Amino acid sequence: MAIVVVTGASGHLGATLVRALRARGQEVRALVHQDRRALDGLDVEIARGDLADENSLRRAFAGADMVYNTAAYISILRGELQRLYEVNVRGTRNVVEACLGSGVRRLVHVSSIEVLESEPLDQPVDESRPLVESGTFARGNAGRALEPLPRKSSLPYAHSKAAGERQVRKGIARGLDAVILYPTAMIGPHDYRQGFPNAGLLAICEGRLVALVDGGFNWVDVRDVAQGALRAGDQAPSGARYILSGHWASLHDLAQLAEEITGVHVPRLVFPLWAARIGAPFVAAASQLAGRRPLYTSEALRPLRGNRHISHERATRELGYQPRPLRQTVVDTLQWCECRGVLARQGPVPSASGQMIDFLGGE
Image (cartoon, rainbow, N blue to C red; front, side, top):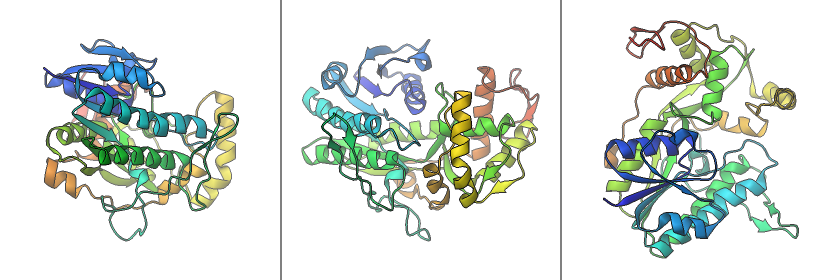
């Protein structure tokens, strides 16, 4: 059986995709940099590599039929341009070159919904939207990556992912068979590094928030994204692009759902965005003192007021993509977190069907 490579295999989507591939009997080579906790106990080949090192990618891709590029660096901070450039831009370019040089049949590249222009807000976002401006990444004299961002900008992360996607499009123009995916905010099980969406959900469920911020996201189950990626790899024509979205919900809606599931009392106070921006420096300072990443920064608040209408119509029509209900995702996520000792035990909770579940004992 042909080998499939997953880059970023120890990340949230990567680890979920590896499990989905193994569930259908696929031989998987998992590319990891250092942390491989998410793959412990899985029957996969581990390949050590670094997106900054094209030679390591060529070794990992040797003999591979398909590569799923899920590797990315996600940051809500403005002081990490160098890291964003190295992974999301230069790293993606190296993946493209390694695919072309190693004879990989197909690349499935995971971009982000953040790279697509969200305005006008009164019209659904679909694959026809242009990419956000990516700025000009230039190498400074001291080896630093400089990025003059447009004035009206999202997070530097979005611009770096847009610049990375342009590398994939250049590869397609050179003959690379590639498909591009745009997932929204992913939550779900198998998040061993606790990314921002799941971290926010846990903060709500553990009563660590005194207030919420007005606004919301389109949330999607990471398992649905993994299935969409598999179907895109199997069925999509070369050069196709698909939005893999789920359901829009405000942070208040998500908190109320968490309260119904766990019984924990959630904040009733909801700050407007302008007030949240004022408080962002204090949140960052408190997080630094506690040795944790901030749950939000002033720059990260912009997507909360983004487009609520994100269409997965093309993926549904062409791939049969169907995201599961948000409640089911939240229940499964909290069950997984509690079983791993990440979430403080809350006692029996209702399942997605309304039945009572004891997280550790099952239905």
